[in-house]
Length: 215
Image (cartoon, rainbow, N blue to C red; front, side, top):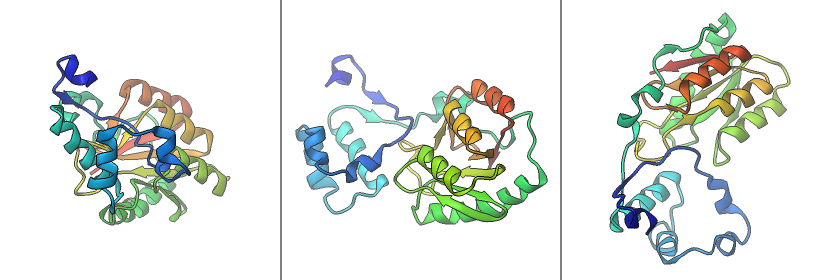
């Protein structure tokens, strides 16, 4: 209603989807859904709560109300990840070996719709992202791996609807990663939005974190 009242007929979604809240006790009472939300929850996604299904239902409901959800990437080409090393900090041989090991495994997990990210060190997968999001994945990795030097790889699934749940990273991602021992952030070129990209890369250089794009 707010969008339509202000003459907006297209919308872009960027950032984290807090899906874990769906599994909290009394979640429906906490959020008190309106009739549109109730229709999505009890009819459109009643037996299928996968992220893609849920977000498509939200997009369809928005469009039924006169607001079309669109792919925002064409509007922010300067914020998309590019192929190759984007920081002055270059990856070490150990980091490159972990990336070469973890990236193909992440792509396989993407095909199975299991999260968007994994962490790796010494050719060992430390943690896999599920519904908790990338920040919590980084925190779990810091708990499991007290040594510094691990790698975070993040990518979309091959059939990703790029209108929503586009992989997104920001300055906070790099800071949290560095604070818990991470030394490289690997994202998918052309399919990852880097919020405040210039500031992100500058901060990564300050913290000694390599940021690079893979295809």
